[in-house]
Amino acid sequence: MFTSSQMLDKMNAHIEALRFTRSPKGLYAPVEYVLSMGGKRIRPVLMLMAYNLYKEDVARIYGPATGVEVYHNYTLLHDDLMDNADKRRGKATVHKVWDDNTAILSGDAMLVLAYQFISDCPTEHLKEVLDLFSQTALEICEGQQMDMEFEHRDDVLANEYIEMIRLKTAVLLAASLKIGAILGGASASDAEYLYQFGIRIGVAFQLQDDLLDVYGDTAVFGKNIGGDILCNKKTYMLIKVLEHANEAQRGELKKWIAAETFKADEKIKAVTLLYDEIGVRTVCENLMQQYYTSAMENLSAVNVAAELKTELIDLTKSLMHRKL
Image 1 (cartoon, rainbow, N blue to C red):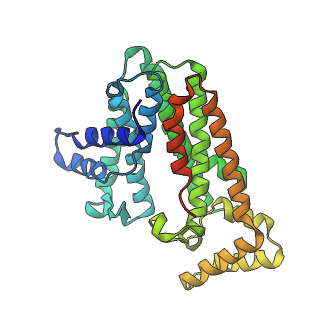
Image 2 (cartoon, one colour):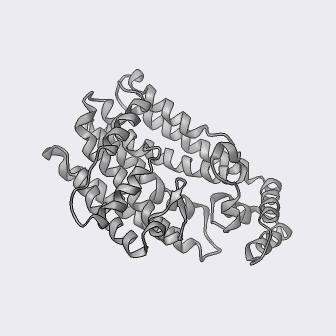
């Protein structure tokens, strides 16, 4: 068994060694730039760890593992363009270094490259893996569209938000685990348990991100808190605070949502105070814990020796215990 940090080192080394030799270079330079930014590589690491529950030769699936990482970075490249973001992981985004058209086209190339990498697996598993990956890619588009539509709605329901983050965030974690299990020769039931584990961890992880954006320690979280509040992002907590607020509280909240000019620190402080008064932090923490507990139940049901699951459990705990 390899540790998660060993898996990360393996994936980093493999991705750093990739060379895109086709031309024109202007198409592939942004791809290399995006992949050079690093990141946690959670998705390929999860794929390798799921495979490692059944087999030791993890190098055999570097291709598919690279595929999910290239695909994930493709979604980030296009997200940055859609959001007109200036920075990603502390570096200028592709559309800022090059231009919008380059970001679109190089992103499209990354999607094709992702499929090429994903396809680098045994023939007997190829259709199942490609079907799962294609379904996942489509679901992520659906989640992104829902997120975009939420920006223009003031009636988003909590269950709609959970479905959006399931699609936008959780399904790729789940698919990474399931593909690793399939390639490792897992039973259909084990592969599905690992998929459901990934879904639930993905939702819990995003709920924690929502919490951290309001209540996190900037030094620990790595970015300024209150960003979601400033842009009126439809997070689970905003949806629940609108649901549970009394008339006066709802009026105060809507005043801040509608305000076109304001001091950032004043808005963050006022909205956070409403969150505290209404108690949505606890509501969000409770739901996050429910998803985490359900995730661990699914992992527990995977039919391999308990000691083989220790690394996955430890990685999950480290992801879910970022400081508030």
